[in-house]
Image (cartoon, rainbow, N blue to C red):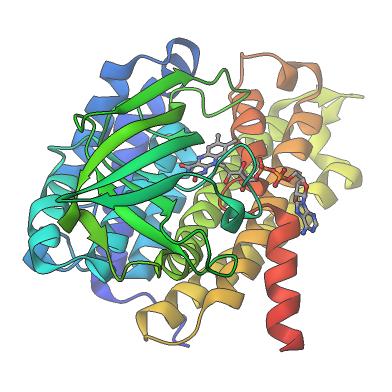
Length: 382
Ligand SMILES: Cc1cc2nc3c(=O)[nH]c(=O)nc-3n(C[C@H](O)[C@H](O)[C@H](O)COP(=O)(O)OP(=O)(O)OC[C@H]3O[C@@H](n4cnc5c(N)ncnc54)[C@H](O)[C@@H]3O)c2cc1C
């Protein structure tokens, strides 16, 4: 692997960093406090204008075709400033990629350009159900073909961006008799389809401005042609796309961890106790050294997974390693950042308490840390 970023990747990284500093950072605390949808939508629109909503999508469909390494770099910069905006961008990129990988030409031309241009503020990925979290193959939402429509019944929970998504990729059981995980299909659903409703927004600890909702399907009519890929072959799509999404979530968590450490590192050089800056204490220096070392290792793991993906090589083990290590390192960095700021770290005078709340979910969604370990071990054990 070449450790140098190419010219395009460097430019994209700089653009993302500048945008995050100038546009996202100044509104992040207000967004967290108020969940103001107008602020969030304005952020998302600007991200689309910069080409960040289809980073790994072909220009033919409105994407920027910059690749997965560029996606990882952008997500880290966005994560540094506003996790709620960053996670929306990560999932929207993933949705556009699923459609690109599995959709017919007609579906690609219909749904990808509005995702990339910002006409749809976001895309949603509807997999999880009450009885199907870490084990999504246990899902119960069903789809039955009736004439020109698939009729969907059931519920999804914890679906990001559902309140303002322009389209949803939703999984449902299409063959109840098939072996577990075999009779599942993926569908493209629009907010206005009859029988489809979005439930209430969950009250969350962090990433509060990103909505997390239930999806309700009551005899929901989905046009026959809105199936992604082959009927009964949707579970494979979900598993494949989640691996790519894990690079996004890992990269975003890396950004949150770095932002927390940058803030704490500045603080400890100014804070005087026992007549000298606390940065002169070895206990504090070791926290700085250990955390930046872990975060740098996480960055390399994530970029390696993204590089393999860009080369068309197998990358799911590496994506899981990257997500596992980055999210756990970022959680530790945010924990230590609060420790380094002492009591002030626990107040909202400084952003580290928000980083701490925002980073917590990253070891849970898009596959918990335990599930990442399971994937890695299974791959190693064959
Ligand atoms: C804010 C937020 C946003 C989300 N966004 C989306 C979204 O957009 N789309 C979507 O489809 N889903 C989404 N999710 C759902 C998320 O992916 C699930 O919450 C996650 O996969 C875990 O499922 P669960 O919550 O049911 O936990 P469970 O599966 O019940 O797990 C509970 C605990 O048991 C452990 N566990 C479970 N099975 C095993 C095992 N075999 N071995 C060891 N430990 C195990 C888990 O690791 C965890 O620690 C979101 C969740 C949140 C909180």
